[in-house]
Image (tube, rainbow, N blue to C red; front, side, top):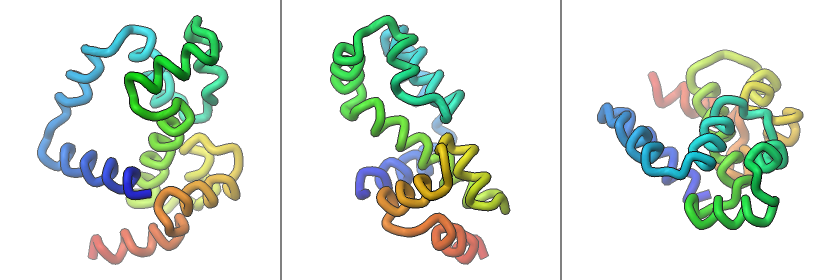
Amino acid sequence: MHHSLACAVVGWCWEERGGGGLQQLVQEHLSPWLRNVLQAMRKDLSTGVQEHIARSGYSPAQFRRHFHQIMRCSPHEYLTRIRMERARQLLETTPLPITAISDKAGFANSEHFTRQFKKSFNISPSQYRQISKRLKM
């Protein structure tokens, strides 16, 4: 949970300072297969890790090992983080119902999304939305 919150804070601070060049710098120094995987993960949040592995040309063990060496987390952890990042953004900026946010963040169902959100942030999506609204006032 602490890592997820730290990532969210760093990402928010970086964007607030107009630092869009960091992602480009990182992307330029990644191997092409990983750059393609990361772009695909961000483009379609509903695509699962197994599909990304199948497209990569690596065996599942090789994929996971190489991914972890570079990203310092598993592919599943990374995908969950970007899904949570998207969900958090939608909760803060839209009036969409939780079920729609769950879908847009790539989760198969809203129950799984809610469990994962609570696990990541120690708060439910609806509570998060309420707090973020109060903070904007």
